[in-house]
Image 1: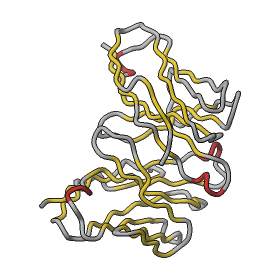
Image 2: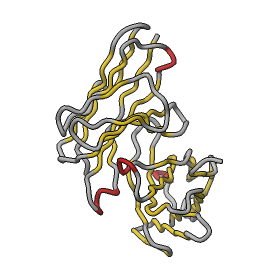
Image 3: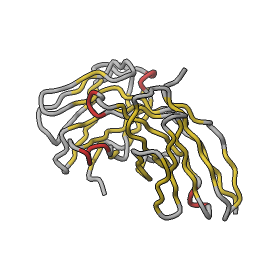
Image 4: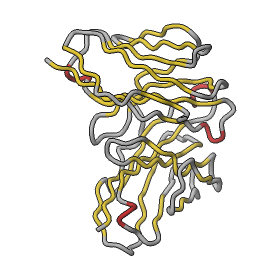
Length: 114
Length: 113
């Protein structure tokens, strides 16, 4: 069972606010990911990290930014939220090696920007 | 053409029947294949992974991989109402930056009692 935690689970904020979605994993995984998924729609990778101080853009362009200062922590920040950012954000992690093929997901953060 | 394609469904099956889900992928060098289950409003959870051609069975689930034809399928035997969910096919290319997976759009399965 994966130990990956996201906070907040649900957030409603006003346009223009800055928000940070937190993601932490206790498995010591070196690789972490952020996916965005609208209800009933596809998962899209927006950010990933190989390890500490490593961050890369994913397949879907996003106005959010990420940081990886500690192995276990991979927060996502929106400097100025807009209604178009309303979505579910899923954090995930995996380890290196053959067993690292498996990606484990957190429970997701539902963001609504009004 | 999408990299990973699935029929969006819904695939409606009676309880106790076999549900058959298909997934095709475009990148011939794809090496690892995964099926995730996602309940409405929840995050995806891994059901099975398969790396070699042929069948792989785990309980009521069987994954089938055919690299020559570039498809991977999932069979759910003795379908239960609790199997009603969206099933996501995911593919990883080796080498792939960051070990990231590419997901299909998912197939919604509805098991009717």
